[in-house]
Length: 407
Image (cartoon, rainbow, N blue to C red; front, side):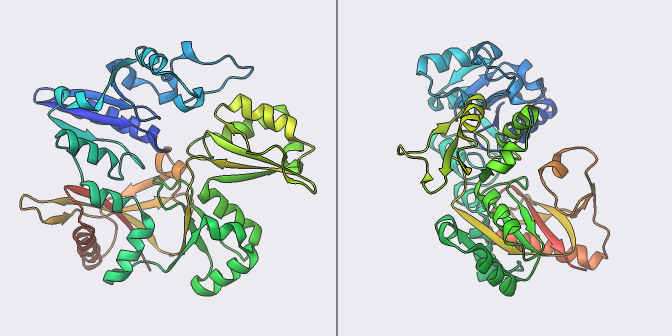
């Protein structure tokens, strides 16, 4: 039986997916199954990957190939989207360095079953699920609708509230409302309604990407957290001028990191005293870090600030009541009769208060304890709630549900 392993992808979680795909490839019983590694690049193309590239440290270590990277004064690690517009012929040639480009219509000839190791938008939102159903390939995990629902934190919160399941109080802030909001007044209102601290979340991201905690009634801290969740960043003249050459390079590298920054491409809007946005019409878009660095070098000090916005940002922000307690994850699988069965919950013991991207995936920053050290009655209550959520959301095959138990 040929098992297509889909990994990589277009989302900010692509590196986690890449590592997960390698794990599936390594652990698949080769006596029973033939693994077919389908790497999904950051623009959504399918690549039948030569197996040796599975063992590279990161995607950018092998793709795009070093031979096709543009000349640059500084060393940068690039993704495919950083190369700008490519012709179909150039793209196919580029892919040939690491494997073979595969069209969606070919997938059913390459595999009997698809194991989805993709994360985030494009991989867990119903998109790839819909494509596989269209071409007639069975796949792992939930179907189109529960996948689309499962990636949308705001939709989940609304359904949990409507069905009476436990969830912290919340507020939905749209990007349009934020554009005209008074941060101090909004923060004051949220403090009265939800209390402090506040948890600020990007509603379609996983791996704690875009998350922040506002502890005090500090409008500047609040604005920074909201901008982070929208994948925007304002750089001031004072901040830029305080950095030396190495500091500026490090700043651009951090900003263009898809996990802890904005990633690329970004829109860069330079604002000038008494003029607002720079004259000349539409703000430029930068796909390469070197070009962005050059722009910032020329924009300052005449500009008072540069507003940078990701092209793959969010349009809403989820503001949530802070929950003090012990964090856990609970895996739910369908049994042989299709009924949800919750496994013993795992406690996440964090070195810091926020279980962020670094804490999740870097060794030593958090540890997991299974089962969570609680009385049996509390463990059973978690399992029953997880099974109820699995059924309410219409999940299929398996799901991981996260929560807190308050002390």
